[in-house]
Length: 230
Image (cartoon, rainbow, N blue to C red; front, side):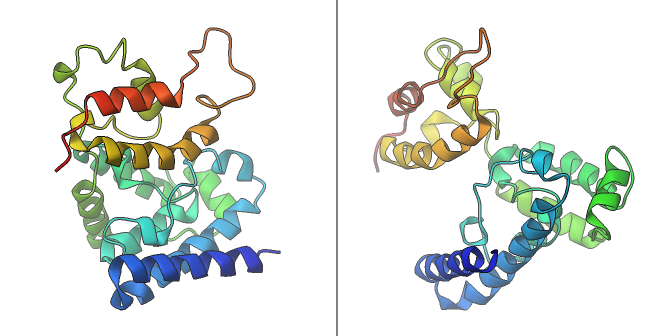
């Protein structure tokens, strides 16, 4: 049952990694993807799969990670996917990653909030040593999201409300001027699946009083504040 999807995913990763980065990095990307698939198969069949699948959106695979053949990407694929989908380094700005990694390492070692549950649910979780923690934090900080300078956008709470409310649910709010309009169109298209996963931007049962966010509003705001095409 699992074999065909995994084979299809492996083929896509080989193709994407070869096209984007060349044959030298394919082995590292495939090794990372194998670790991701193994961990995902384990926890997605557990009794806790309902809330585990809701922790992070299933938006990244090994080939789409920044620096996909780096030691940092390998550590992300080895440790962070033991209990949830692959985290995007752009989820947070650089200063937040150190505390987040430290908190997750405590859990992986079976302590702290949900630590005992993690151990019981997953069996023997692997935890990084101190050098690996340092490397992982460095990788995440290096590829973290540069946060928005809110002072530059006085319309963020009005015209930019859809952009603000949708995008900061999964990652640090990005700087609109950091990309061109064409680049934003591609990014928003890729993020649409994440917003559907959140069941807030796209949802069949909105809560009373909950703002209904529209992709055209998000894209319009980003395009108006985008960088000029180079």
